[in-house]
Length: 143
Image (cartoon, one colour):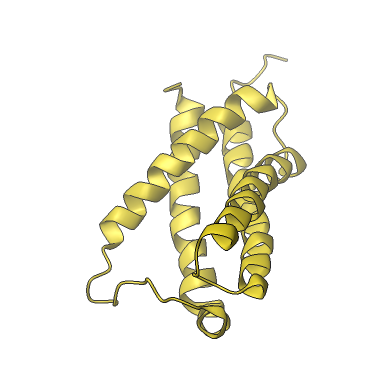
């Protein structure tokens, strides 16, 4: 659980998740989601606490990296990582998105559908980072 591979993958994925998340939801998709938001629950920038966002990413990445280590069974590649991460994104984006759509007034249907696609791609790339770090940190076989 606290192997070198897992800890390094957690750290690399955390930085990736923090930066990529900011680029996607903090810059690229802001106007789209503003147009599809029904109830704005976001804190103003002045009240947003980046430390909690970073710590949340850290815990999420530790969970993902730990699960990936058990799921991959030593097969570490771009495809393995993206597939793993995309399934996580599917659970979050589609599963949780439909639960939110059915129980709240956060966004309209279009917003939730786009969020699901973004989550699948976003977590897919986080999975790639985890996989590539696992591969790079794997014990080298003697030739």
